[in-house]
Amino acid sequence: MNKEQQLLRKKSPVQIRNKKASFDYFFIDEYTAGIVLTGTEIKSIRLGKASLVDSYCYIHDNEVWLKGMNISTYFYGSYTNHVPKRDRKLLLNKREIYRLKEDLKAVGLTLVPTLVFIDANGRAKVDIALARGKKQYDKRQTLKEKEDRREMDRATKRY
Image: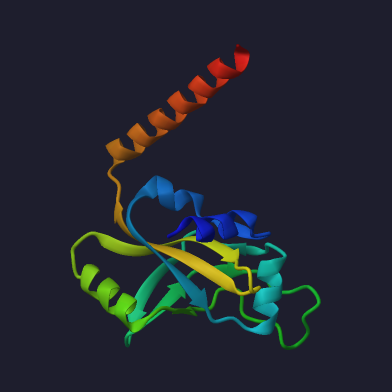
């Protein structure tokens, strides 16, 4: 990911993060994928009414799918409103899908969505990460490092 892409992500008006993913997993590789949405789904995402909690990705018939992402129903939608927790197709290159499929054959690896954002063209994108689960002692170490950083920040603000 280059600096221009990182800048666009930071400037995006909508950034829905999966905070628990970084606590539960070590990220090995990251990809940015488009997501197939209906009209009321993109409107809900632009309002920030989505959640990545307990969501994951899987590969079926050489297609990557996002399961468990909750996009709330659109308030002004009528009978055309969407189902909040349906499986959604992710758009990646064949080469990337093949690489992910090969990597997922290893034991202990999974695909986790980390961020949903709106790009410069107004389309919803999802950052997914190839990840390995953390053990309990790794999680404790992460918490300790986070607390130490917070303490150092407090100490520097005092002076």
